[in-house]
Image 1 (spheres, rainbow, N blue to C red):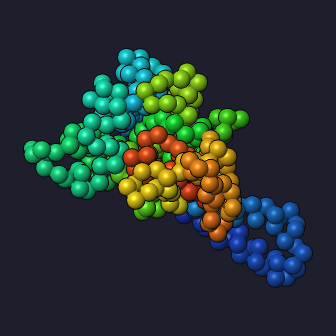
Image 2: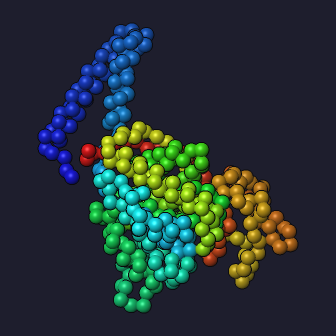
Length: 369
């Protein structure tokens, strides 16, 4: 829906008046302070300073279009059953995820893998949504997941186009002790940062960690990446092929809070500037291996289940079958995650190193109310 011409004119007129007032206010403050520096603390100057602050915040805010198309992916990995069960439930009973003015579409992303309760059939579906995978000729002998990725891209993309879905939530389970984790792919996306802030606040006191996978060495071609605003939802620990009620409940809660955020945004709620603490992925650490590629050591007991906890130089990291300890020799403290993830043995990853950083987002408001 496009705003009417009269509304656009009104908005333009308001902006002109606002900046005219700002110019006048700024001139008054400068003149008063030059004549008497102590006057900056007078009620008049304080009021003018508040006006300037408000104007600056308005100027810095992001005006975004309403988010009308949302997808919820389950079964991208067929043996991660919380997302599979939730999506199958919502396909039958969609009232829970319905939001006014929003198309919310639950979707089983890898149906053959779900049917066999395996991670994938031929290759990892959550790694092939890149130019190579999406442009491969599907008429030849290509992996099943390549063909499926192109189908998903045609339904919810095309990736990088204006026709792509606004938001995709991709539901995953991990065997690692990560708790509730949301995964961002872009550190400058004000909308998803604001959504993370809303989810964290709503989930409290249940912790909700945010993992940022933006660096080339740790970023991969995810199914959700075809959306304008992708978000992964990872909840654990849960074994592959197993369903746990507590883990499913947490995932369900996160999805509903995320949909609430979209509804509030579409209905005109202004979200002020915010900051969130995130864990930015740095690199993947493999297990020690012998010349044949077999494991030479395993995760040390003091690191096991310690996702998001600090790992300091000298701390135990691996232990061999002979009891020899391999310590972390990095230059500074890191925060491991995906520690001893079962699905990552084949990917030569014992855990991912992250650093703790702060992301900020401008205020956002919907431009199409």
